[in-house]
Length: 128
Image 1 (tube, helix red, strand yellow):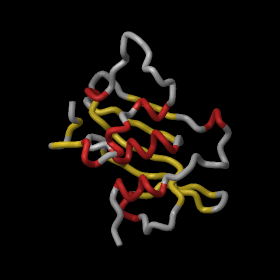
Image 2: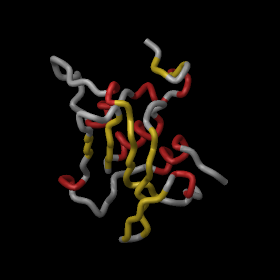
Image 3: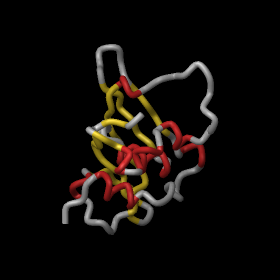
Image 4: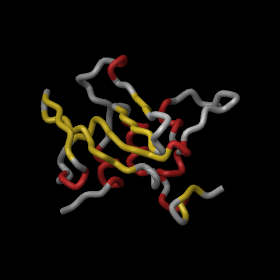
């Protein structure tokens, strides 16, 4: 059975219990000459949303096997793994630092929850 990003999101059920809160980080990186941002997260809520985002290309997931961790391509998952991290790339154009804070300070809310609802995505983009 071949899994896709939406299936992998269902395997990312909790943060990695081996990491301290300070280690459960999200990193977004891009340089001036790149049109895509590199994103890594070890936060389950944000990771699920990133895996389901139509414009994010998953480059690998971190899976837990007891006390060891390894990164694998999504297509190598068999459905029994515990996903504890996601590495992806997304267009820099998705990113925005607003003039005022969001209502919620939750990290997962950085990525809209509309990506969790397949019916909310039309033609590869978010409905207004």
